[in-house]
Length: 348
Ligand code: TXA
Ligand code: MG
Image (cartoon, rainbow, N blue to C red; front, side, top):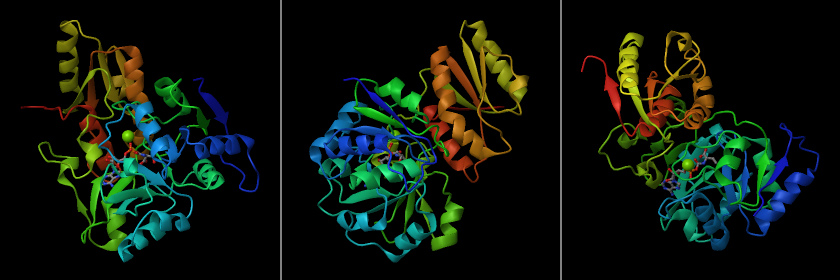
């Protein structure tokens, strides 16, 4: 299968009909799988009401079938077909953050394909804040199930090029709306229990959520080893570079010693740092992902950096840590997983 690219200028003009989007939407209506941009990462979409279409997503990605998918909608009317009842606090979160990078786990209706929910009684729903995604969902007039559009286990794609690298020949097409903004997947919050729980941290932070609904818990497995995650997807090795990656909690001198020792063993070494520190390192490949002084820029380029290390074939990556606050919580969660939970502490 030749994978088509539909280029769409972003921002789209709401009053204009884009033949590329109409074509992509037709493919979705026919049960095909189409990748599209969102404000977080690229999604791999299919009709959420069709078993056959949703199964194609799992085939294209090589995704384990016990990992449920998020359903994307363009307006709140679409919720009626998907979820049973909406708790008042869930409605407040929708009003505050939709369209936007927040996925709500709610009690599902039977219409949704069992392959979307992986047999659970709940379904994850979000309204993406991306004009191309919204235009596509409106144009096909279907709820769209979409995981991140990477091969399972790889970092999520933040550009159409990343999607093409992973899935060329495996899907009918990619709607190319340029690079995504946030760069990390949406915050996932379980709203199916009395006390809501964050299952996956994202750019909508616990503090932002507490401003709207006062109490929210954070699933401890998002940062602790040996805790069973409540979200099926969080247990898999994720976002992983090909090389062994280590988070290093230490100063630059300490990281230099690590680089030196590894190079003496004949290894090719990568360092993941930021603009502020990049000139300080001597390693085989030094990549700056954004600015430490502006953590949203780190989030935006993190996955692209991990993919670049793969292209450079490094053996080991040493990575600086980030403050565990605001979007730093989500950055550290992804890095910690990418490292397979390996943190090297100075002085230990
Ligand atoms: O930003 C995003 O959320 C992106 C874009 C494309 O929207 N999508 C995304 O999907 O990251 P995916 O499939 O890569 O991650 C979905 C996460 C997984 O960890 C999955 O286990 C969890 O959400 N999830 C989905 N439905 C769930 C449910 N009913 N209960 C618990 N966790 C659920
Ligand atoms: Mg994913």
